[in-house]
Amino acid sequence: MEREAMEFDVVIVGAGPAGLAAAIRLRQMATEGNREVSVCVIEKGSEVGAHILSGAVMEPRALDELLPDWKALGAPLNTPVAEEKFMFLTGGGRGFGVPVGLLPAELHNRGNYIVSLGNVCRWLAERAEALGAEIYPGFAAAEVLYDPAGRVAGVATGDLGLAKDGSHKDSYQPGMELRAKYTFFAEGCRGSLSETLMDRFGLREGADPQTYGIGIKELWQLDPAQHRQGLVMHTAG
Image (cartoon, helix red, strand yellow):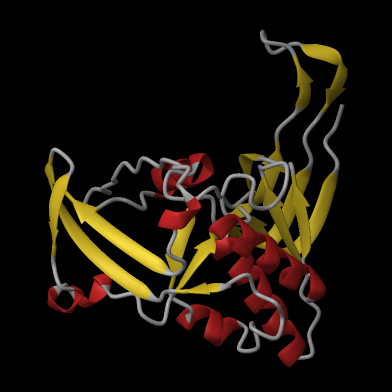
């Protein structure tokens, strides 16, 4: 069974903040230049934001540049940072605070917003679609497509209806080819397709090794009396 193919000017892999911002800017530039540029975003999650679970403190500078009227457009930046603390935890329920003014500028968050990054991505997807981009959640890119000259020519989504041994079940459907003049990989720092591109084209040669940190997220249920809206607290120790 042959795979169906769709043609676009740009295919973007991943509907996170980077992929959606790219889709918005491309469509803005197309409108400004009075050109028709077809933009397709595919997202492996069942919906945009499904894999963006993090809460975040967001600096709005990039959003000011991308969508200057984001407040009027209803962007979900609803909680400005009102207070900051930095605590060194010494154990046994004890700790001591450090004046925020003594900390590096990277740890100052006045003027920033406390957000759900998933909600921000859902809102960005709405803006991208309003500008004419096509977004397809639930489609995971499984393969990079190349033209006869070896250049990237798009991606293919994964086959459906495969048994554990790889055989085809009655519900088998081949993946779809999404071919494009330009393919934008925005699948995260450990994207599987990005890794194959690094190997194929030697993109890491002569570069420092990539470094990663492990983050652990906990959700705490607090006494509402302890909640202070707009508070950002950093801890160490």
